[in-house]
Image (cartoon, rainbow over all chains, first blue to last red; front, side, top):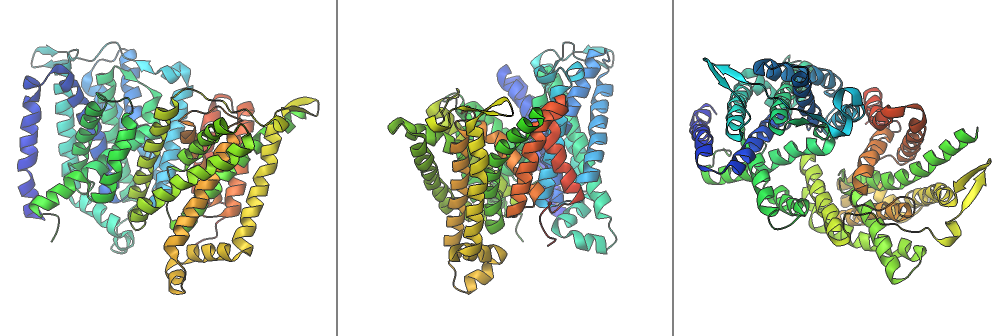
Length: 319
Length: 286
């Protein structure tokens, strides 16, 4: 396992360089698309900490994404313009909410866990949709002024798509690196063993409930961070972020990419958005084609597109 | 007093529709262990195909008969060629596969019939208004309140008194044992899915005169029927009945008492039941 990890760093390094240079060559529209892919990719990688590593299918991640987005929108409306403060506050609010939701949810498994997280997510959706005075109801909360960043005396603003892309890129790079460290820490190893057999983890003295809450909270916090970024990128926080159908997106992306590979969900996000771009050039019925593409992926790519291809060409996953 | 009565009637008529959809969902889960995300789309398809068949022969009863049967054909194909392959896979794959089928069906309907509203007229005999305690009330809703328990009772008798019903229940208890004593389990699975599909589509056809038809009508009801079957206890028949009535009544009274919070009621019910009785109200511990 260890050698495999060292081996794998070459790919991510190349990907990082590619993403760093991409805006220099691709058109602005694709730069914006790439920002969106990175943001949703962060959401999917965070979800996969639960789905792929801990074995918990959460259908309520949209709530934490939305909480991050609303936190950012409300802070910007109130005049707070410190970028770090906004990013941290969004994470913190999502973290606290995930602690509460996780506390109640982690005692359940499988389909019941999926249902209760869906229920909690939809409660947040109902609040966002109906608490007009604070959230603006179904119209959402618009953002008019973006925070700027004072970097060694230079005042950086994020009003151009390129600057926004680099903001997203840096934050997502840091967040995904942190998630990588978590997954490859002893804590990450315990999460994987809980996925395999939670009884045994409790026999050897692991507190399954606390560990699961911790995983849920970490996933929620990074999902909230993705929400903050999306609010800045999109200039808007809307209740739709919290709806179960939004929560299903990172699940789709993770399974397309492969839940057994750390960066699989990020690739899944890329495949998802690029497919969407290609298909909507020909037809309005993008969902129909998404369904038609998803069916064979579920049936014939049990480890996701990225995971299955990797196993096929590098034979790493198998013993 | 009248106000109370009307809310109870509204709650019951909505509850009965939920019940029809939920029993299909819960039977499929009980036998095959698959929670079918596309079940709401089969409901929606039932409504659309009922409307479509009424164009060939202008009678609601004809549509009610033919529409759901056409959906059953689609259901059987889905089971035989797609679902069959994921029975032994992880629950997230089953959910995602049925979600993909939902996308295809919903967007397919949008492509064929457009995303606008369609209306189905109730049959003349049920298209009136009746006076209940001095208030006008649509006859069609009363019809729904009566038809729900009738279909439920017939199904219950089928499962308990006929040979086929007993075989299906045996297969849901232990499919390996059932196979061992010579029961054709794959055939049972296909038949059960066909039955579940028929119930969903029948619910859709019955709902057609009461609500306007839009492609997304299945997406709202699928989440509520998930809640009904989880609250009642996955796989439980009486649980689906109790859960559907409970949710129908709560939603009906919620519009009066809960104001803006009304939207959250089903989810609060779901979370409370899962926390207090994780196996649902009617399921005995495993």
